[in-house]
Length: 574
Image 1 (cartoon, helix red, strand yellow):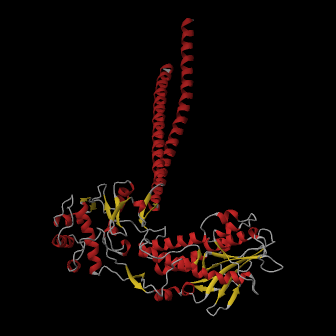
Image 2 (cartoon, helix red, strand yellow):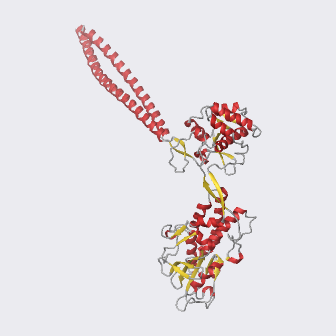
Image 3 (cartoon, rainbow, N blue to C red):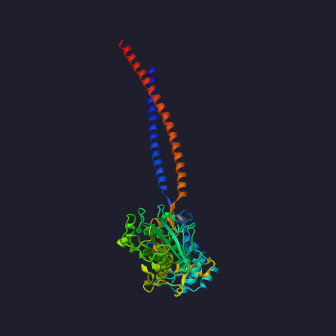
């Protein structure tokens, strides 16, 4: 009975051990499956970290959270300048949601579009269909239909709904410019700062010559000048540099180059350049339209080229050059008779007669002898007349607005009499300024221009329906994947199709909300997987313990059986 019982126990142990090993193997496979699940969850989270969304950055702040929606693009508001921003496909067809598509069908507009714009009757059918689709109210439709159909809107024609323009005279322009001043203290424009260079011997001075001829110099850094002061010419304003010969590096070329920098380069010696100040003041008053903004850029470049006609002066600065030919490339040599104030006064008084710089020379300068500033010190003065700089700027602006080929105005380096500058007292040219107008969705003209423009684009380019386009996420993915485009009206009155990234108002930003959702999902799934792994690990540990115990018992039982068999053989052998 003992041997039989041991053998039965051995079989039981073997069966249980095999079952435990099977369970342990099954749990190992479950752990591998959990590892794959964790990898998938991690990959999904990593992908989510790169999630972006499209927002409407109307104010150009770079941190807008205004969602880009189909309704925002296709409903009249200040955010689209009361002109529809159309979502289009690769064939430039307007993508319409279900409501707009139903209105287009009701108006009889085929999907492939028409050969041109139809009659006002078709347009009115489209407007009435918008009422049926709850896009606009019946009252609004009636007010729109009361406005003459604009069949050229979006086709090279626009109606300004957010800006109004006014033509003003030269005197009116001076009145407006009189409020924009250059103040060394507040604006940082370098005007009359004594010892602008810490090295002795170089001083910038603001020289003024009053209408009665009174001459004065200012190094207090407190001068205030308006652009109107420069243009009316009653007082002449000159920036002058005095460079003392004999001090290392203080040569006419160095002083002239320093003057160029103060006039043209922002940040030179901690200041705003004079030309930047002039452009800012003109832009504030005259800017705002495509033509005027381009004309202002043209004027800026014209003055820049007048003051910096080439790089010879910059190349020669700092190496002790005294070559008069280099100086002649940027200005005119003044050889007036020395008076009580020296050549500095002569140079400044001569500057109103020249465009570009006026300058004197030092002893033996350029190989020419005999012209001394005074008997003890050989000083050089380089100056430029700010009134002439402002006048050239305004002349270039008027020339561009008139048409460069049609204008008689011109300017060149050297004697002012050889140029033909704009004179507001003799020319009745009218300047255009821009002002804001009040617009609202209650304005029938505004509403009519919006929907007439949309209607014209649908008729001209055709349309396609997409019922999902109202979903902002779907719209963003369509735009980001290149399956849809944005068509916007340009300054020339035509619509142009482009990628969303080229639109100045559409910005692609990190989708923080999507990332937060992905992070929450990741943490939840990770916790679930880790809990399952902990449970499996505990079960596997228990199984390992049981298998170890069964192995020990198996070995013991097997040993008992072996000994019992051995005793049986010995008994029968005896």
